[in-house]
Length: 457
Ligand SMILES: *Cc1c(COP(=O)(O)O)cnc(C)c1O
Image (cartoon, rainbow, N blue to C red; front, side):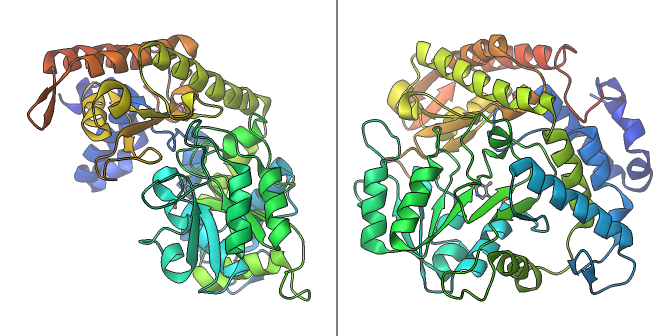
């Protein structure tokens, strides 16, 4: 199909300069635009940014060096860049009710790295969720800087590795056991937050546990940032010393990160303030010049997230996830923890449908449903071919899907699973069935009823 035949021919006008200079990149850009619009995006960490956020990313702020912070730069010419960073910082503080905000971190992982450098020394102990139980690489996993430079202790659930802290019956956090681990191990920092936990985090309980052992408490809200703003998830800001986040997940900003923290003194040095330690950890410890165009886009994102429209969006994200979970349960899928309180759902496909997560995710993608395979707590299978898939509703809600479309999605997933048969070691899916579903998915996505923010077609 040539580009002019696609329903997205209008993107050509958006990217005229790229088309003239670099047809190869232009072609890839148009194809990716079409891909993002034609498919049902169910990866819970992905979303669509607004046109305003994308435009801000493409402004002249990408041309400027500005090492330092507003009013204290190492380069001349930062009067307008200072204005941009002030906008982003002040909007972040107001939006979350935080004492201090740092908006310079390049992404979520560097935001966490800055929290480590601000709060601990290499070799000290960090307590975080076990990656295969739904934690994040940066919460102490061995292939990540956090597990290499710091001494990790985990909570989660894995029988053979002796990891505890999730109730094996309910799959939910067991705060008594978390407290036992903390009292036994006495970490310097405790992280709350994860990538595949479909339930609410009780930040007050984390704070109480941290206080008992004199530890710092960091809440990593990368996945649930938008839900906290929308008041459909408990707020960590009153409890956590440091809150870290990405800016490109539920909150719908540019790819980036930010850090919020309390204005308090350090446990090991009452002369030092946490806000200074955080800012110093970001610059000059970890980064040089900030990405000012991303900070400009972040400012726009925070402005959009402060609206009533965004609050309703966050509410609908959770309603959609609950409707989708219900529809999946009705179709015989087994869900980790039995459902969801937030934007994401972890399906144990192996348990309920006897299909591993990886071939199922690949078949779903052929059928037009974009997901990712994922470990489940205590997974008997290996991480590269685990038992589960992880899905979420932030992106589809951004394009206006509601409960009605959630039932369609569950039906499509059920049909894909139903078209699978095992041939020796291989899991084969009925290609005709997948193509038929794909056509239905594309019809819905290009019907004009569900416009994608930031993409005109
Ligand atoms: C996504 C995520 C991160 C890391 O973000 P990147 O931008 O990919 O570096 C950190 N913590 C959690 C809990 C996440 O979900």
